[in-house]
Length: 114
Length: 113
Image (cartoon, rainbow over all chains, first blue to last red; front, side, top):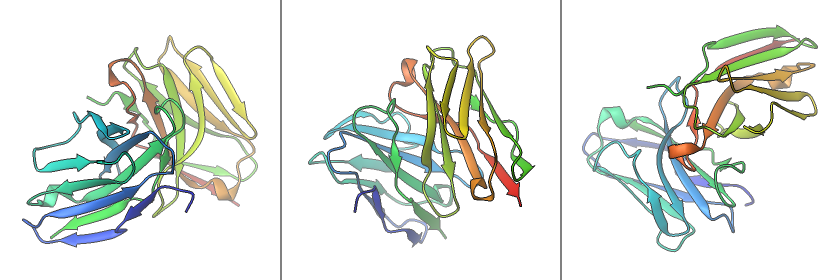
């Protein structure tokens, strides 16, 4: 497809379970971002890749969160030992260069931890 | 601290009238501002942007105004259409925040036929 694709769209995890969320950015886009959006809030930055290099991970809330983009294309956000406060929509965005050009967002993965 | 704030959680206007959505920011290092529109169960969609070297940018029915001294920007939609009903997010980037976008909380716009 032409847009940013995220999978799964919905994920229900039991507390303590590990989850992996996938993002397929637009082909050729150098920059890739992960955001977390809690209910009724705006998206909050988690981490940023330029090609395969993770240039900023200052938004990751704890060491249970880990992201990778090994070949500079597909990215995976992994959350270990999920907790209820991890319940949110996780959004992936990509852009050709930097976010100062428009970033294109995927539909998001809604994670519910029960 | 909330560096980008949208103080109106919701706005309701009549079809054909002007919609004005407001956004305030505190970080004077921000140099690029964007508006995104979001429909339920979809990701945010880019709408319009403005660089800090400008004070106005227009694209069809959408105009964004930037007042740097007041650290305030607004999005004007005229004429408003029912299909414009969505959540609108203001976002900013630049300075020490680098490439990341800092979003406001969003404003739910409802355009009534």
